[in-house]
Length: 383
Image 1 (tube, helix red, strand yellow):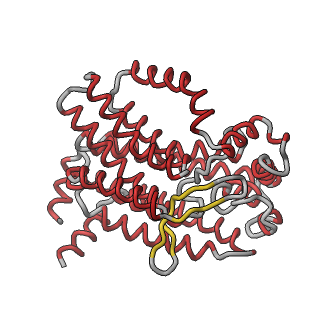
Image 2 (cartoon, helix red, strand yellow; image 1 turned 135 degrees about the horizontal axis):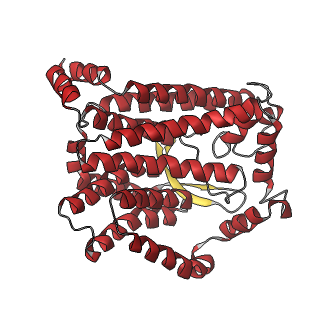
Image 3 (cartoon, one colour; image 1 turned 30 degrees about the vertical axis):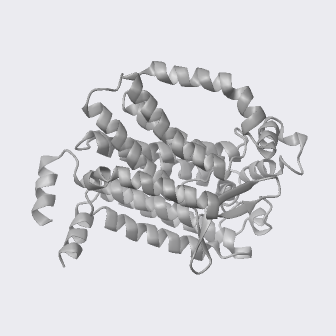
């Protein structure tokens, strides 16, 4: 009874604006998924179930004090590493026609597949934020030893997901770490050192790290028309779908290109092209606006956070959503090479959807404990 009362109280004093944005995005995303599902696999059911699980998890996690979660960051980090290592050796391998070979999924009972890196992204936000907060509390952010330790912390999931063949996830882990490090006050000179190192190591990465299909994707992105029926096909068709919708689109459930599955993986990596075809420029702008509002709102919560770790967790989540959005839209508009990064909250992907919504529950708890004496007094009175 006390647990139920606590959950009800959390919902009562939660950020209604953030919840409203969350539900609007869920409905919008499911509408696009329903349209894509009309001529094939029922992605709508899978995505709806995943979102429901994520929302239930969000409600539960917003009732758990984020400071308790932060204190368990070491165990959360160990769990995350073991989960990715297990996937690396025991996971399911997905092979694509273009040379993709990623072992990034595990099979659950009932034949369901789960992508652990999506859950580990949330775990990493917690562990890296806690690590940074501890350094800031000791006023040791300028100590080179601490910078090296932060770098080592960030490289663990980056290297492990690269070994899985999931470089899209590796890039997002890196972006999360850079966002938290920048907001946490790591001196700019270290970012310049990192940029210079990346430039120097680029030839080595090209020759010894990148797979052949990744090199082809990069070269194809520079000139998609050079191989329009193979490596450039997805991006060319994606842009054509976006452009075919004009200002207002051809109408929901009426897109002929969607019905004929012209754009490969339109339900996931290229769902933005589906929005462009059926809802046009207006539908695409609405997606960007909703994600931007989510980012702005979480930034507001971070600003009013009760402590440093709460603010850093918020900014870590902003780094996750912002980087995935930028990379996904860059892929769809041929501004970046295809890298298997999904559009947060919109792309089909049960693991991603459930974990993103779950993370919003943690953000809601940070809001409940934000630096507002009146709200905290009311909240604690009813807890």
